Image (cartoon, rainbow, N blue to C red; front, side):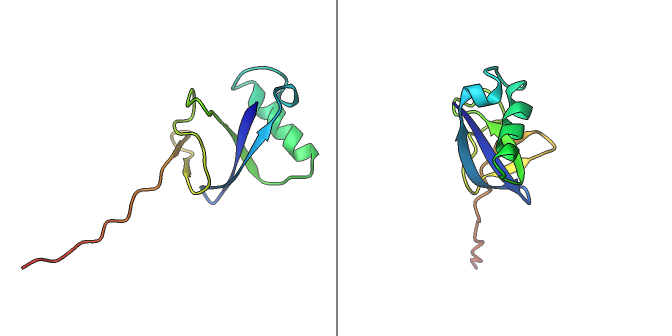
Length: 88
């Protein structure tokens, strides 16, 4: 099975599973454009990037809320918000 993440404004909003045969039966990166074309053929719009459950490529496995860094072609967790506390 191949996993594809929908990217909106640099954020993962959905992750779907696509059968290997619907990705040409090959490995990444060859499988990605075939999988993207399959997703589009279903009428599902948007920017979709293949992600690796085993983390073999593109850093972290994409989950909703993760960030896609196009400059590095990786999925990363968002930085935690740190509250500064002013102490005397």
